[in-house]
Length: 160
Ligand code: HEM
Image 1 (tube, rainbow, N blue to C red):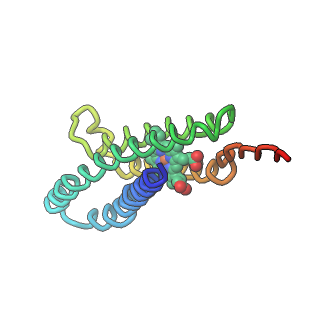
Image 2: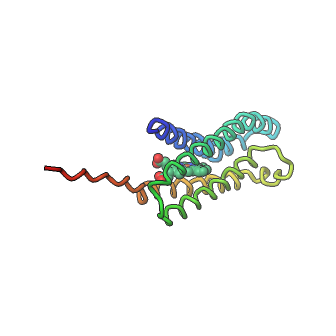
Image 3: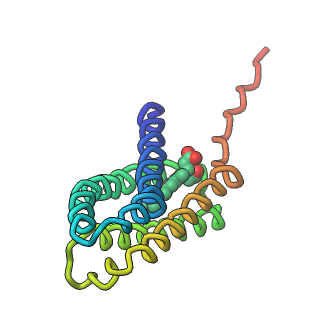
């Protein structure tokens, strides 16, 4: 269905813009600015920001998965037998799962991963770097490995 295909693309790209853009803002604008605050207001600000950002990340992961698998399964037909495409998209999906894990840990509250949150500048930069690779692979396959056009039915021979 063409409308759902377009909707899914809007959702996928819109989510990438929102979550990746938000992460860049956090890492390169908010973190350095907040680091100049005294400890108590800094911790308070971190708690308030994370409370909201966590929800956006959770909804973002859900939307990535729904629209991503819809795109992948829907695009299967045009990429049948294209091993290189499936290898690249498979790699991209695995990297995206890595991004989801890191984003969940950094916005989460599990004491197991407190050591990662204590180094959130480094881990957030790693997350952004991985997500940038995911975007690069996605853009590459879209341009260099577009789906094969469906075969056009040849017209029936004219009968005289
Ligand atoms: C960090 C998470 C992700 C990011 C930043 C991301 C980003 C993108 C971007 C920018 C595109 C290009 C869209 C376009 O130009 O129209 C794309 C396409 C795509 N994404 Fe994702 N994506 C992510 C996660 C996923 C996941 C989890 C899946 C599958 C489960 C997925 C499957 C796909 C597929 C199948 C395409 C179309 C590729 C093609 O052109 O054939 N993505 N993604």
